Length: 79
Length: 364
Picture 1 (cartoon, rainbow over the protein chains, first blue to last red):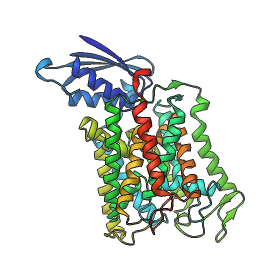
Picture 2 (picture 1 turned 30 degrees about the horizontal axis):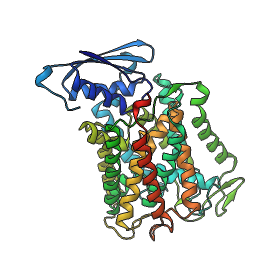
Picture 3 (picture 1 turned 120 degrees about the vertical axis):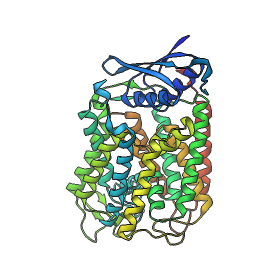
Picture 4 (picture 1 turned 90 degrees about the vertical axis):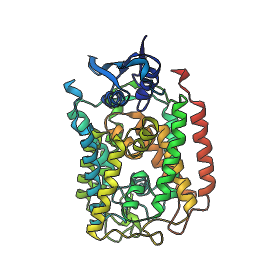
């Protein structure tokens, strides 16, 4: 089940923390963020949590980050 | 994507920035800054509070250009890379109070996380207690973060609001130029200057400012954060920011050794005391407060430079906290803790725990 996290306006580490929790509970997660630091943090999280990641700047200053867990159930991520 | 590609935020970028700070800090000490205090955000903001007469501790009065450089260097980087985002409104009064107690904790230890690292790199064993305390305070903060602690969302605002702290810093520099230091005089115009003690020790203005601008620029790009280094290790098992922090310590130790500034031991270290419990507890309070506020004192200056009005409020809280610490005998000295330092730590922990326990994300 895909889940959307609206992390706009939240400062680090909250976007990455919310994304980490969500990807532990869902195979697909979309995270909305509004700063480059959050994009970098979620990117590092994805590398650590074995997720595919694609980042799109939907409007200037707003990024939509799609996370897809690879290997799904056999690779649980601690929330 | 092009807009957010950032080599400084990569693994070698953050290490490189840590190394550059690790080279500059001992050099600033060689060029005049106090011992193991090439860069100390808390000490330098305390000196600024003194220069403005907010406290009258006569050994801690100087407008430190490094601090202005941190903010203005970050401002330049943020504009160049289109990252200037004026924003505020995430519990500013709470951030102010966190700034006050972060500073009080730092002045019980005698240094912020930056100086704790530099003290260790200069051979000061007391810094080990401080760094352990810092990690302990941050660990408490991560428990709150895991439990849903949040100061809430920021809002976009006018550019004017984002410019407030950079303009304040430019104003401080202007005051220095209008009322330059007169050798042997404790006052020049409206500014106070130390004639003895750490406040009297400083690198030349242009050198301090240039180093501050360079560090501010690089730290904005790399997101360098001494608190985040430990927090991310505890929260995410990530070494990214920590690698920068470690690079700073290792590089500064080498440079100190080369410059003959490495003096291992616990006794008679510059601007330090040997009360281990209070070194630990002071930095623990500071670490907890910075963790709850989302960044170390340096990071707060860099965030303020990229338009974060909430970080600017925390900086103001730290400057006021320094005034409180010195006016009411909370700050330590090389002889030990101040007369009211220990109860102030107790109050600080109580306030931080209250904030951490009660501010949950369910209002978002």
